[in-house]
Image (cartoon, rainbow, N blue to C red; front, side, top):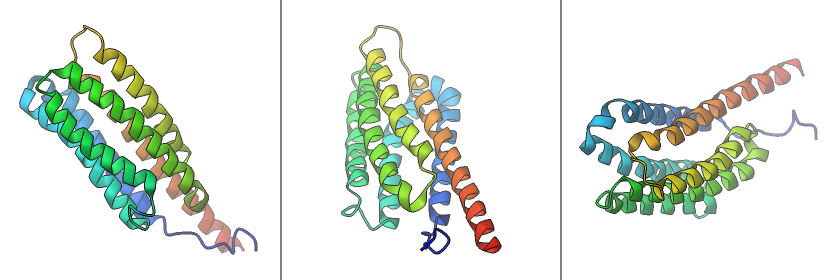
Length: 192
């Protein structure tokens, strides 16, 4: 059986999912670098909402891929993201250094789970190299945030925004790469 005879899973939902993740992350970054820098209540809501949104997104993604029970890495990412949203709400009482510490741990763990998910998906969907890089980069960003959390320099939502910006970039690249992959596959199918 050649590769043209191999059925391909429907990637349209995954492209839409990555595009949605890009859009939400981009909006979050724009708000973090602008309005939220001087609006502490908005910044607090956004800091709680970011991991909560990640939990929802992982749940929806896993639901489209057979459910959380079949996708252990997404189930773990879902759980860790929910716990992180609660931990951020509690850490806000201690200050931004505590919040950065929580985000740092979350970035390391969620990056690992994202990496595992991308590695699992690459055979069926292809075009997962950006998600693999994103998972690895998330671990590095987490380590950076943990270092900043232990420091004495002032911290704020703008210290987390670059992490979200890189995530947005990787989601955009993944959506575009899946689109290119589909175009190439369709061209091969027409030529065959």
